[in-house]
Amino acid sequence: MKPLYLFSLLAVCLLLSFLSSLAFGSTSLADERFRDSILHLRLQRTVVAACAGAALAVAGVLTQALFRNPLAGPSVIGVNAGAALGGQLVLLCFGGLASVLSINVSESLYVMELLVPIGCCLGAGLSLFILLVGVRAASHAMVTILLIGVMLSSLFASLGALVTSLAQEEWELGRTIIYFSMGGLEGKAWHHVYFAAPFVLVGIIAAFLWSPALNVMLAGEDEARSLGVPVKKVRFWCLSWAAILSAMAVSIGGGVLFVGLIIPNVLRAWCRSDHRVLVPSAAIAGAAFVILCDVCTRIVPSVGIIPLGVITGLIGAPIFIVILIKQSRVYN
Image 1 (tube, rainbow, N blue to C red):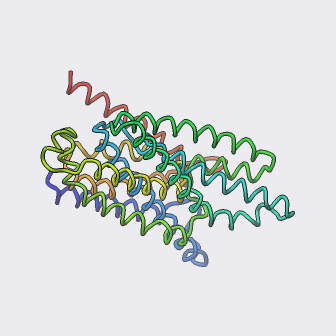
Image 2: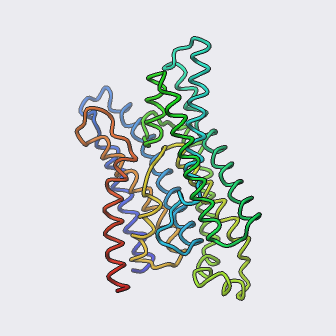
Image 3: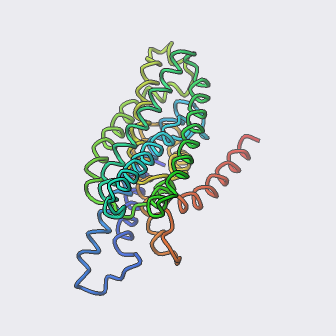
């Protein structure tokens, strides 16, 4: 499919998902007294969902290009788990402080929510720092990066489980940390957009600018070096931008699964592996996908709130299995 047709199709999908997010929800728009307020809240939530989806999808494109593996996602470098741990620690520390100062936890949740994105960035930064130091100390092979990233992901996930268990003494705090881990956009407002959108936009632009080098590196690092591509520089900056994009997505959306894994694979059926087309396409498709998944969390009948990460997992896992089956048939 030609890039212009692909971009037009994805733009239409994004527009329809955007309108659907404004139109559908658990609250009716029939009452004119509350219509403006409801639309305003849904608009904020929709923009946050778009930022998170675009960030995760482009981060997935970068990691899959670096590892030359369609099974690689942002989580393989450990940054998602590090960002989640940072947000959980912020919630736990402020919950403990509120308990010591005899402050109602529900009254301090707003303050904690404002600082959670900062904690996520610090956690992701720590994960990226350990990853780069470990790679420099051992070797520069991509398998080393993969192994260190997987170990960091397991370590930070275990620490996150420890933080969650420590928070269970306060029911509301424990519930907040669990919900953050499962992903969700409830309570998101414009300050989340102002915090994450500049980083997401710059990260997408940076990924697009590195697209020619990533195209060459698909043939192998030795071939890329022979053609004058600064492999170490490309690797460092692409890992850094993938980490930043993942951190922004976790900071505003929590643990949202499968977006960075399935969106690039779905798009390769139309644009192959040309990153000059794949990067902007993934940003648009990722935004539309997360918006539609967020709409599902609001319209699916349930007693409580369905976490966004549950919906993306339920939709993403079957899609990814179908992709794997199709690819296996092609290779066989």
